Image (cartoon, rainbow, N blue to C red; front, side, top):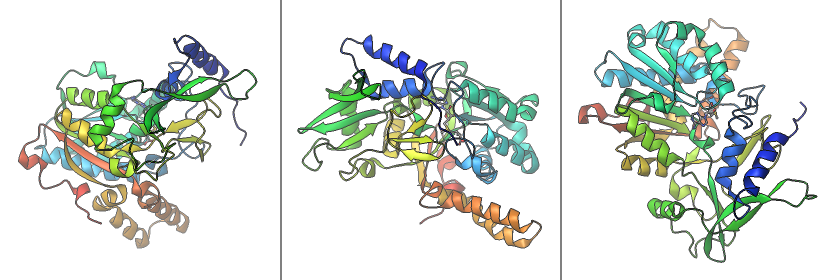
Length: 396
Ligand SMILES: C[S@@+](CC[C@H](N)C(=O)[O-])C[C@H]1O[C@@H](n2cnc3c(N)ncnc32)[C@H](O)[C@@H]1O
C-alpha cells in the first residue's frame, strides 16, 4: 500500500494558528485537536479516517458481530434491572462506522424484541464522514424510527434514562503532554521548525498552560515531580474527560455510563518506569510514536487513565459500580459458550476458524482482552446497583 502525502492545507492552518499566538507556540493538546478534529481538515473530519482491515486500525466491532451482541446482552440486563421501562435510552458516543450499533440492533431484533420496542438509540459523533457511513450502515433501523444522530446540545438536561457508552472514544481525546525538567513539571508545546528542517513543527517545553495539570496529579495522588521520577520523564494528561463527564452527568437522569478502552489505573499509568508516555499513532495498521509524521493522515491516541474517569466521575455524581478487563467482561456475558458451540457443527471449517480467531482476539490479554471496562452509575437505587451486572461478575 502506498502512503498518503501529509495534509498541506492542515499544516498551513496549524502554522497560522501558531504564528497568531503571542509566544508562537500551542499546547500539544491544541495541536492534537487540530490534527484530528479541525472542522474541515482533521483526520476524523476530512474523510481520511477508516477503521478495519482496509483502514488504519482495528477495533473490537470491526472483528465481527460478537462484541456488539455480547454488549447487547449487558444492555438488556441494565433495562431489566431498571424495571423494563417503556423507554430505554442507549447513547453511543463515537460510533465509528456504525458496526457496533448495527450488531446491537440485529441481535436484539432476533433475540430481544421487547427490549428493542423500548429502545431509543442515539449516536453522538464528531466526524461528518463517519456519520455518513453510520447512516448508510444503519439505514434499516433509521426507518423504524428509534435511532437518531444528535449533538450534546440536542439532549435536554436530566433526560437520559438508560446507558451512555463508548468503545475506544476516550483514547482519542486530545491530551496535554508534560515533562520533568530539572525537577520541575513543564508542558510540551508545539512551535514552528526552521524553514529547512524537514518537518514543519518541533517541540519546546515551558511552564504549564493551566493549573488544572498540577491539580490533576494531586487529584490522582501522584507525586509529580519528585525524586522517584527521572529527569526527562514524559507523560500525558487527558483533561478533556472532565467536561465530557460533566456533560454526561448533565444529560443522565438515571442509569449507567459504560466506557471500554485501553488504559491503566493512575498508579500504573504514571509509574516512573513508563517514562515516555503512551502517545501512539496509527497508519495502515503500523504503530509508531511520531505525531508529526503524515500530518492529518494518521490517527493519534493516548491510553486512558481509568482512575481519573472514576475520580472526576464522582465529582459529577457518577458513582463507580465496577471495573474489569474486556476478556472477563465478555466471558461473563457468554463468549465462552460461543467458543464451545463452534465445535457443534453447522459451519464450514473456514467459518469456524475465522470465528474462533475473532473470538480469541476479543479476549487476548495482550490485545483487546486487556482493555479496561468501567461502569459508572447515577440516580440508581441500592437494588439497581447490586448485585453487580453480569459483565462484572467474572473474577481473575
Ligand atoms: C477510535 S474510533 C472508535 C469507533 C467505534 N467506537 C468502534 O468501536 O469502532 C473513535 C470514534 O470516536 C469519534 N469521536 C472522537 N471524538 C469525539 C467526540 N468528542 N465526540 C463524539 N465522537 C467523537 C470518532 O470520530 C470515531 O467515530
